[in-house]
Every structure is written in structure tokens, then in C-alpha cells.
Length: 367
Image 1 (spheres, helix red, strand yellow):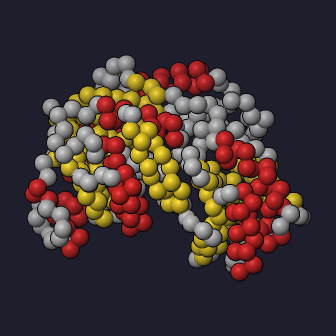
Image 2 (cartoon, helix red, strand yellow):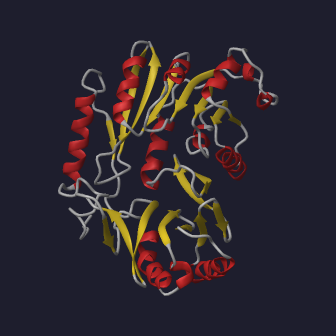
Image 3 (cartoon, one colour):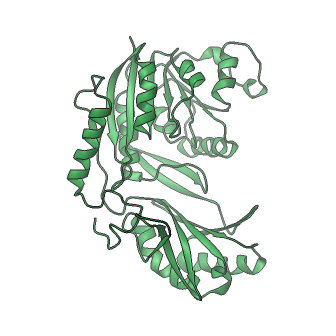
């Protein structure tokens, strides 16, 4: 990737390396971090080095009646004005200059616009305009024209206000092991930022399942892993604490024709109590926990890793699938898990090119 803001924009910190050099650096870092474990020649799944991000957020910098996209500077404080970003996918990249010109010429859309968020799928583009002022009816009228002009969906946000002009989601399609899975992805919810690498990650997990019975999934979100993995297991119980994510996950089951998943809005702590029969929950009235025979548990926690109680909980299962966005917390948790589990498979997924971030996937089996 070539970018005229390399060395100035804080978004890319490995700008001075070729992608081969960057890949080598990330592999060496992981080998060193996990040197106490027999991870062998782990698999590395690369990304496109440009036009790969389907989610992006930019500050908006105002100079009189002009606006600019802004990113934090690599060195020092302040905002760097930019015109383009070759990291974002083609849909976002193509619309950025046209969108800036349109908003700049429209005082209602421009006035006190603080930031712009993009959510792109293979079928649609959703734009969130965030303001430091109340959103009025006049804004809705202009935002509707913006939708019609560019064939996109627009949302306006300000303090305690969310104004949806047409819809607040996109539908995306992922291809895993020869199958297509469709997903409803809500604005503001978590979703994988690199579609191509996400497909590789899902395919890797699906291809490394051995002796499956039933699956328990924690932190399932809108069902990113749940949909393709449901084809590998007899039944799936997937948990999530977000109401909106559970709603999306159930919708995704419907549009994919999946019948063997039960989604449950419940924390790990609550699920632990339920499985130990310490407490009864109304949310479990329609779900018979005793009917599940879990052979695998999948966890995809936030950067902080798994909390101590959840870690203790997952250690009761025979196989653990651990997806991590932070190698350091993965290493911390693995130091505990390795007392009773061995690493069967290990892979890296380069979701964020030109940064130090790397995603990991490990499959563990009880010793």
C-alpha cells in the first residue's frame, strides 16, 4: 500500500516496512511471546495490504466553511487533515471525496459535524454523522437527499439522540467452506473489520473441529462464528448480554435457515449458576440445558481477555476454541489453561495491516 500520509498519520505505525517484512515481524513476535509452548509452525493468514477495512471512523476538521477528514497524528498531539485513506475498502474509499464535497456545500449537514463513521458490506454502505448539536427536522430532510444522492443509508447522532433516516444496519454475505452466510450488522455493534480475513478465520475454525457433539459459544455477538459452526455440531447454545446483538443473531438464523441454534441473553456468571442448578432464570424456560452434550466451547472475548470466573468455567469442557484480539492477554490466560489443556492448533489472522495488532486463534484439548 502507498499512502502520502505515511509517517504522519497515527493509524499506520508499521508504514516503513514492506508487507513481507511486517508479516515476518509479527510472526517473530508471536514465536517469542509463546516460546514456552510447543506451537510449531503455526498458520498465518494474510490480508490485502490496501482497501481492506469495512469499518472506519474519521474526525471532521472545520476551517470556516471547509471541512476535512482528520486522523490523530503519529507523533505529538493534534489532528492531521487527510483527503483519503487507502486502508478502507473500495466503497468507502470511492465515496470519501464526493461525500466531503457534498457535506461541505450543505450547511445543515456540515454545521458542528464532529465525526463520520462508515460501515460497509458487499451489498450496502451505512454512514453515521455525529454532531455536537441537536438534530432537527431540517437535518432529516437533507440526510434523506444525501441517501438518495449516493445510494447509501444515513444515521445522525448527537447527545442522547439517534436519528435513523431509513435503516440502521447493513446486510453482508460471507463465504465459508463453499457456503454463503448472510448477516444483519447493526450500526454501533461489534463486527469484524476485515471481511476477507474474517472469512479465513471462520474457515480455519470450521476445518479444525474434531469429534463434535454440541457447541457452547460465549460472546457470540450477531452470530459471526455461530452460523457456519452450526453445520459442524448437533446443537449450539450461544450466549451474549447485548439485547440488540441477540435480536440480530436470531434474525441471522432466520435468513440463513439455521434451526439448531439457541441464543441466550445471559452472562457467563449467570450461565454458571444455571448449569450448577444454583438459580433458575425465566430466560431459560424454553431451553433445556440438560439436553446439551457440549464437546466444545468457543470464546471470543474483548482485548482484556477472559475474566477469572469465565476462565474457570470454560475449563470444564473437553475442547476450547479461543479467538483473541490481544496476544498478551491470550498468553496470560494460556498460562492457566495449559495446566489442564494442550494446544492442538494455533493460527494468526492479520486483520489490521500496517499496525502492531494481530488476531490469534487456538484450539485446546484437555490433557
